[in-house]
Image (cartoon, rainbow, N blue to C red):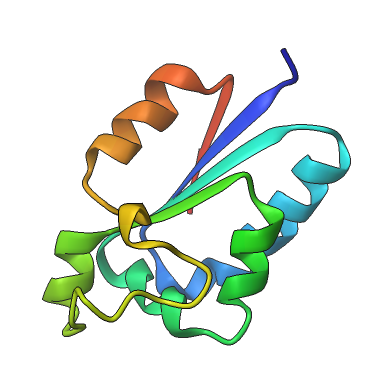
Length: 104
């Protein structure tokens, strides 16, 4: 199995760092999962967000955090499907199932 990297994002100011890490990890052949929560869910509205979703193997956002940040949960961001509007269980998956973990 190729190395895998789980990325947990809570800070909305780190999107470009997250994107760079994803790009580097994918270039090295790693499987990458990114989970956005709390105020980092604002990143889902960035014009670059769909490109991140295309590059990473799996991207999801915390639907509860998204709602608490003032967004309509039926307004699924570009690049995501409704099933990727998820719960904090995604964080547990990153911790449990991925070789490496980083938090932004």
